[in-house]
Length: 248
Ligand SMILES: [Fe+2]
Ligand SMILES: [Fe+2]
Image (cartoon, rainbow, N blue to C red; front, side):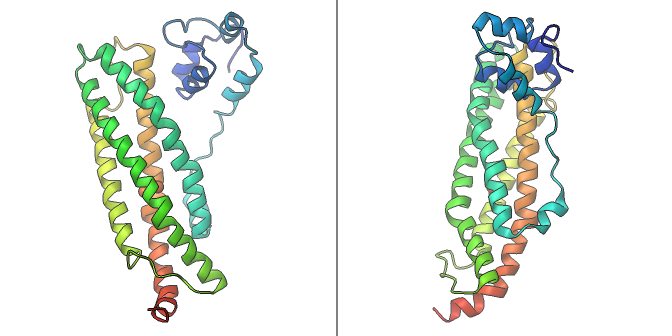
């Protein structure tokens, strides 16, 4: 339970690292000067405590993904979910993680050289994932949505430039493997996100953010590889032959 009067910013971040992003957003220093309560920190910066407490309250009840919920969704609704939850999360998390991994590498790289390698790996995977999501959103997902709508409502399906959904799906699956491998390398370099004894709060937070990033990617990729893509291929087999051959 968070107390305005007794719980320190540092204790809150240690209990739930997602609080770090909330404090950063409000310019509250949870790292070097994190031994103060929310009340004290807000008073020093002339801030209201209520919005910060409200934001911290939203962290408590994040629903865990449940497969049956997603398998019951239409493919287009599932795409909306993937884009609004997972693509949005990746885009929001990347700038913070780039900043944090670079800072940890700069400050701690001499004593812990693995954090320099981790920062380099993260720059690469962040770039790859942003291109990957753009391809999904501009090429593959609109086609799957068109398949779902045509299946439901009838009409004509435009012939896609990539021939069959199988082709971009194979490419996306290969990119998922590459991103997953890079994050697994980061996990291994970080000894499963275990900071050393001399790690400062930013170091600890960065490792927890990297853990969350990998966990989210696992859910994200699961929804695409195991639910969305097989359904897209099945839908294409049902919808495309009649629609496409008539316009060939
Ligand atoms: Fe995706
Ligand atoms: Fe993907």
